[in-house]
Image (cartoon, rainbow, N blue to C red; front, top):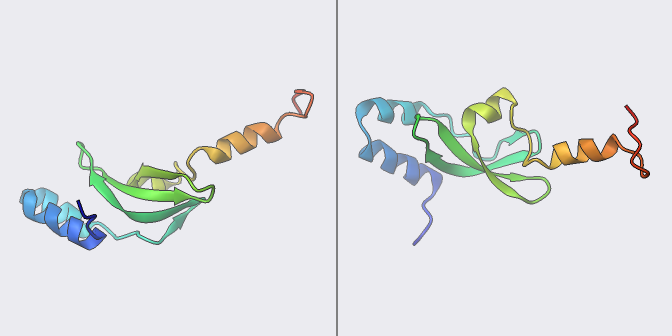
Length: 100
């Protein structure tokens, strides 16, 4: 099965859905290529059950994740989870003593 380009996928969603969904999808800003924290947006992924739009992103560490557009824009999601692990590892000395 061939992977569709983002624009083609959005066009198909407009054709398949009712007018309310079509308008929402058409108003959706294409954020492909933009960077949010450590995440670079690769392509549109899908529309969720609650009409949320999801985007496939690649983290600076190389892991690919699918993230809700509103979480990207609000700053709630900035990495695949690697940043949290990095922060936690910085808080501890090699002998496991906390340096709070």
